[in-house]
Structure formats: structure tokens, C-alpha cells
Length: 476
Image (cartoon, rainbow, N blue to C red):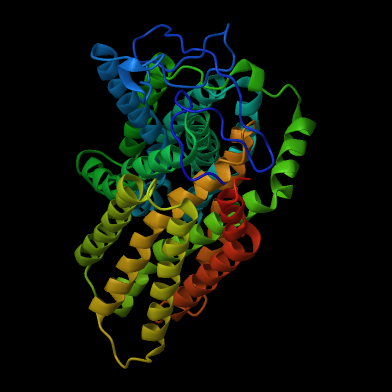
């Protein structure tokens, strides 16, 4: 696989293994608002941000200078903010609601287990919705399914704010998750439309910066909303956020998929496309590696409140501080990956390093929880969790980038498979962390070790990075 690249306006399409380079690209044409993403209908091969500068500079054939270069920088920032907002919306939908769970239980006179289903329904909707929206975006383009999903998200969220019963709330939380999945899957597909190689990995690292902040601030926002209103106010805030994002997408995020690359088939064609993606051993390898890494993350999220507070006696404030520090570690390492490592070191080497650190941290946590080092306190365990979480910043962006670089004409379907597999594998792993009760952290560490070692095995035996490195060294 290629280990260098850039925006698609700067480089020809990087083909998957076996393809030949040389795809011609038509010039970029500006449409509508300055800085908007557009595709000229008369030039269906264009898939790049309007006004993106050529690395050759003013001397190149299409290298803008001065005001054009500034416009290109504004375009890049706009794209980043729009896609980051779409990626952050699902975590906001989940985590802003967490502080309100006890209030929902009292308000709707429903058992706690029933109210917990509102979280499960939203998570299930996000997983299944990606399988629907991904193929839709390959057939009808990115813009139309995204706008449709955002409109449905706004309506479902508004009805959640008015729900009179727990059953109705569960139903519309499911619809909210299904519609919110459009932002996740199409954001990844748009990145694939616009970027190749290391530039795609860098962009994913930037998205991680934005979306990584969402789980940190969402519970804080939810708690502040509850100070001035009840739990329904949280859904009112989410409705407002959805409306703003819908208007931003409608005005500034134009189509990025060329008409010539749109699929024309129906459900059968979508299933055939997904089957073809899954038959690609390397793509499937990266997909499973990413899902297993996500399972390690889910195990941490599910178990850490009990491990930190119940087992090691930390206060809720201390837990919140540690949770925030771990999230910051993931974000910082993700930025180191995008700004310093990618482009200097091959993506597979960086990914391999991240997986190795995750395995070592998970094994250390397992040994500590088993008592191999004697009685350990919170500090060593918190340090192990911090290292493990930070290493996710090396693993997660690069698995997405490497998988999507193999999906030239089916980025939506590929993004759907990546997202759904991560949610499903994570959802299977999460309940296992509590299998021995709330008084031991051993199940959490065991799940993390098993998933991390399995991820390394899939990386080595399915992705086989040394084979592609050898072909590239030989000029193949």
C-alpha cells in the first residue's frame, strides 16, 4: 500500500494492489459559496476541495498564490469543522444524556433497566444505520443521504424531548441513532473522496482531535443543562445542535462523489459490493483490527467507572479527572501521529507500534489486577489505562486510513462496514467486563488482552504488511 499521498487535487488516484496508476483528473471548478466543496457536473472526475493549492506553488500549472492560498486554508478548516461536527454528534447524543438517567427513571416512572434500554437503542441504531446509509451514499452521493439523515435526526430528537413514556423514548432513541449514523459513515466517506495516503491518515487524526473532545465535554454540558431545566432540555439542546449542523451541511458541504463513481444498482448491488469488500483479505484485516481495538476501548469505557470508584475507592470527581486525562492522552497522541509520524514512517509501522503498546499496557494491567506485583493502588492502574488509551491514537486513525485506501469506488459501503464492525465487536466485548461482578478488575484486563492480542494476530496474518512493503521496495 502507498505510504505517501495528499489531497486528490494534488495526486492521481492511488490504486489498490494490482491496479495501474494514471487516472486523469479534470480541473476543479468553484461553485456557489466561496470555499464550499463542489464537483463540476461537466467534469465528473473531480473530487477535491475547491481552491486547494497545488504543491508545485505558483509555478505549477494550477498553483494559486496569495488570496487563493488563503481561501484554500479557510476551505480546509471549514471541511475539518463540518466533518468533525458530524463525527462528534453521536458521542454528544450518547454522553450528554448520561447524567439525566436517574431523572428519566423518576419522570417516566420506569425501572432503571428499562431506561438503560434508551442507551442500548441509540447505540444499536448507530451500528445498523451505517449499513443502510453507507450504500445509499455510494448510490446517490454523499450530500442527499447526509441531509436526509440530519433532518430525521432533528425530528427524532425533538420527539424524544416530548416523549411521554419510556417505550416511546426507546423507539425514537433508536431512530435517533439510525439517523445520526449518517454523520459517522459519510464523514469517513468524504475524507476518502478528498484525500489519499498519508494525508488521509492526517485528516483522520485531526477528526480524532475534534470527536475526542466530545465525550469529555458532553457529560459536563448535560450536567449544566440539568441545573437550569430537566432531562427534556438535553434533547432540546441536541435538537438545536442538529439544526445548526444541518444548515451548515446544506450551505457549505457540497457533493464530493463524482457522478461517474455513483453506483446504479439497488440492494443486490449494495450487498454485492459489501461482499466484494469482505473478500479483500487486507481490507477485512484492517476492519477487524480496528474493531478489536475499539473493543479494547469499549471495555475501558464500560468497566472504568466501577474499577476506579468501587474497587480503588476514587471519588466521582477523581474518576472524571482520570477519564478526561485519558481522553486527552488519546487526542495528543493522535495529533503526534498526524503531524509528526505520518509521512515520515509508514502507516503500517505506526499502526504496529500502537498495537504493540496496547498489548503491553493490557498485559501490565492484567498482571496488576491478578496481584502479581502485590497490592497495587490506583496510581499504577491509572497509569496503565493512560498508556493504553493514548496508544489508541496510533491505532485507530491508521486502521481507517489503510482500509479506506483500498476502496476507490465504494467508500460509503466500506465506511459502513468499518463503523458497524467496530460497534458490534465493541458491543459484544463490553458486557464481558462485568462477568465476575463489580469487585474485580480482572475481567476488564482479560478482555483487553484477548482483544489486543487478536488485533495483532489479524494485523500480521490478514494484513501482512511486510508483503506490501516488499512489493513497494521492488517497484511493484
